[in-house]
Image (cartoon, rainbow, N blue to C red; front, side, top):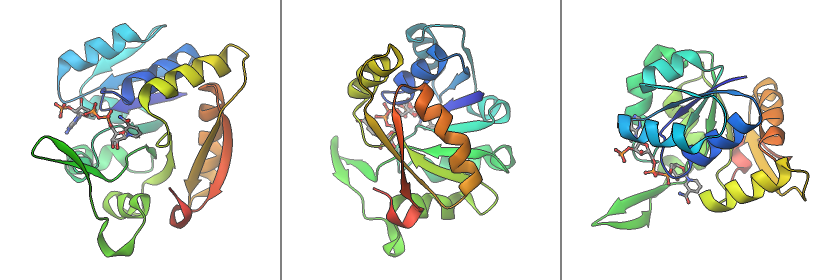
Length: 188
Ligand SMILES: NC(=O)c1ccc[n+]([C@@H]2O[C@H](COP(=O)([O-])OP(=O)(O)OC[C@H]3O[C@@H](n4cnc5c(N)ncnc54)[C@H](OP(=O)(O)O)[C@@H]3O)[C@@H](O)[C@H]2O)c1
């Protein structure tokens, strides 16, 4: 599958690597080209790299691995390139204040991915997953699962059943057992 990684930081890099190892066609992107090069180097297998817009146009699935507070700006930047696409949202509502991580209140009593779906609009098919592990843990558990070891559970949530069904093989190929957590209102 063609997978775009928008945000090649701590989470996007190992996730892209796991999917590239599994044979998916991974396209890393970031606001900073240096981070794209570093992510591509960390990945095993052939990967592509470029701008977030190029990545979003390329991907059948677009992973938004940017900070929660950057999400609306990145969505505005990518605009029509996301329309009709499946977007994977691993973002937790964490922001930064004076150099420290803080939990951000999600507006309107929504869950975090319900808010992200609101930002994305109804023509984007959101699936929330890969948000429950730290990056090193994600990589170690994923590689272990890919190599035939015990598989860790990876929950996923969404309101679009076809999009959820399409994401399950990605979760499994990344080395995890996909666990359906229900709709976006039930998401962690
Ligand atoms: N790290 C974790 O433990 C963890 C665990 C689970 C889920 N998550 C979630 O995963 C997401 C990414 O977290 P992270 O830890 O990987 O953060 P990170 O290391 O800061 O990576 C985010 C990347 O996105 C880039 N970015 C910012 N604005 C962008 C834009 N407009 N277009 C393209 N790229 C842009 C950032 O570049 P700059 O540095 O230049 O801003 C950075 O390289 C967050 O929502 C987080 O909640 C993280």
